Length: 100
Image 1 (cartoon, rainbow, N blue to C red):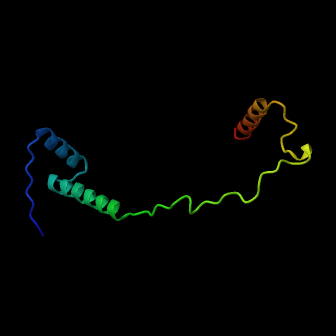
Image 2 (image 1 turned 180 degrees about the vertical axis):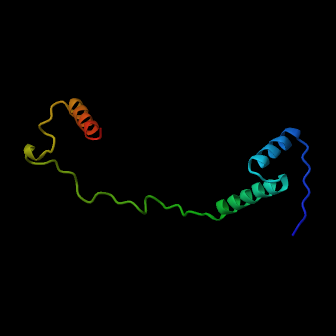
Image 3 (image 1 turned 120 degrees about the vertical axis):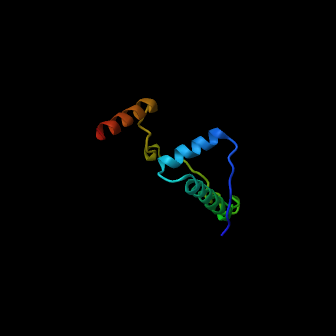
């Protein structure tokens, strides 16, 4: 175990640390050690956390079939809708009314 002595040359920093330590109901050395401990723990976790980056070209698929529009216009799902903006507004209003 190491003894560490800390000298604060900034009176504003000292007052802020004292105020925060009092809010946490700790004495100043315990509070500072807690801050240092959390900092070291978070820093070590950030360094050990490694996420492998994948190459999107190796993990993606191109469509195998070409797009073909339906042969019959009756097969189009929204073929009967002339005003898509008005239709979207009506859907939104119906959804809001269901959730009220």
